[in-house]
Image (cartoon, rainbow, N blue to C red; front, side, top):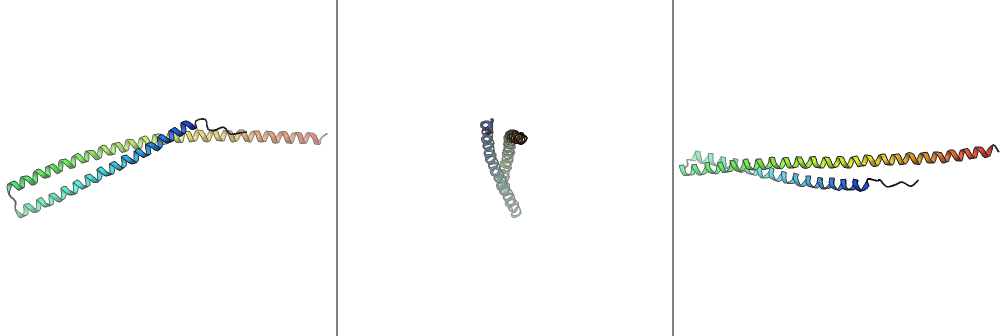
Length: 148
């Protein structure tokens, strides 16, 4: 008995391509998330360094104009950190969405794999039954000839 190809193979292959695409997208999203986190850390470090310079300047004595400049720039750095934090959160959400998309596509592929395995098992059982039938017929015909 010749085994038929898996009837849903074209759909399974499409699902596999979609899963591969979702995995690639997830990789890009996680890369972008990593970059936004790095930028956030760099901003925080710069803000902390600038804060330390400001505190040192205060201990050394600064003019009211310099004080205002330091404060204004620290406020800008704080806004930049907040905005970058927001970008990180958005990137995390996109990565999470990408993960869910990839997981859904992977489940589809696994479902088709299960169906293909069931079809293979059904085919193996049919072949086994056919072989057993042939053996039974052969054995029966040999037993019939021995009694003649």
